[in-house]
Image (cartoon, rainbow, N blue to C red):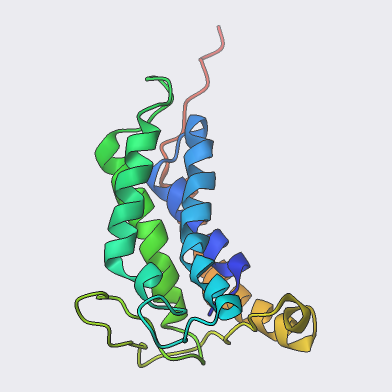
Length: 184
């Protein structure tokens, strides 16, 4: 898997790109959390769930179906916000879907594991992309705090962080500038 840092960075970036107004910052945080959410399945390691099962790591929680369910629930919850603070439901649903689905996409770019069950539960086969530049993250916190974790963070800085920063910079450059009032 990619680390939580890479997932959160991509989710927050998607939030800022799709809902650029500062008043929507809580949705940027929600997108960041949705991007990390599929790894809730890693609890299964402690419960004896086999890695390659439907409920195993990178199984159902990493699927496009799970992303759609998270987006639907999140969009419904988003309607509880004050009308001036909430984004259009369609845009919020798209953001939460893309943020959650981005998790599997990043994991399919990593160098380890069994692949991602994008189409689970109907097609439980697991997939990787042919290009896999991101170092797989150790699952245990102890292993992540060592040299392996530093290598993962360096890999994610290159393959996730830099593209996110580039997209945010392009968004800023494309934003129309406000003209200062003319002096009399």
